[in-house]
Image 1: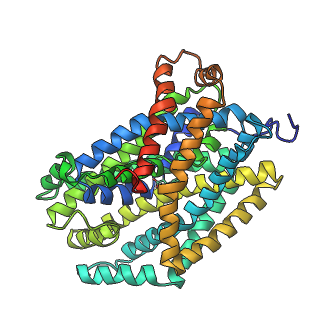
Image 2: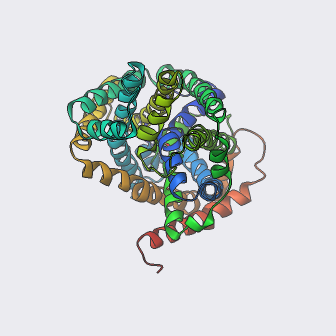
Length: 442
Ligand code: PFF
């Protein structure tokens, strides 16, 4: 074993709450508040929710556990982990793909992070008040196709990421997650009560909880799988990197279940903020990506004190985006510091500069943005997830995996179920969804 990567001086999270706040911070993001509700709106409401829950439980949780255990077993960044566990073999390429995915996701995600700051600012300065739907639509189109303003906010957004990640694992990531995640939760619950108390809100609740299976097609399954990967931040190394900072005392199964529960709860709560309000104001639930940036501001504009609720909502979105992006930055920084021996400060700056350049391309070329978005949730994350489960089942020995999952004391009763899920169900499901997506299953 090489001395330089013995991992002895690595930082780690200091408490269970810190671990869950950080990992849930990565998971809870625009995927929950922006994407999940519009996917739900387009794909049959509760029917999509049920499908999502099913996939998260049977595939998402076992993959998250697999990823965390790769990190904790090796106590290394995602590329170093594979080098360490299987020296001289090509498995490290899975880690390379993960670091690549971190750049790809960060690039387009920060642009939407920048939109959330713009909307937060516009709400605070009451610039969205009194605008009609058409005007709001114009505002959205104009802003998202503009160049300088989105770039300005992207720079600010990146700078926040840099400040936090430079602070280190405990002093940056954990500290901010422990503060921002509870704040996010308070805001979302408050907004949910406001939305549910509107006249006519019930129709939105019904839409959410009454399944319409007629909208379900094979494509819906593909969309749901992609969303599970994206929303749970699995398949690319965030959970492996965070896993490498988790103490041996923690039980990874419990950690993964807690993180997934928080992630799913926030997705449902956001839907309970959005749909009751959408229905109360007689608007359509299937407005796609514009749901949050056009439909919601329209609702806020009609509410008493709307600018306050709008500001809170976009603050919520910005926080959610930030705790997700700094996990992406950390994947790269962990790699740069441990394998390329860079100082944390330098590593953070270098990574952030490259990411910013990619983001600027996303602002300039909408097609680039769309390709990166498609690539991440439909290809990189599922393929990464597939290799991760194959690695855990076929390369690591069963008793090694079991020991690691039971490291926190207590035997893991469900180990056989976990093993069966990652050995058969997860790879099979990912493969089927893939073939189907390529149109090979007719
Ligand atoms: N999970 C985040 C969300 O739902 O918005 C997005 C994300 C973050 C995906 C980190 C992947 C990742 F590695």
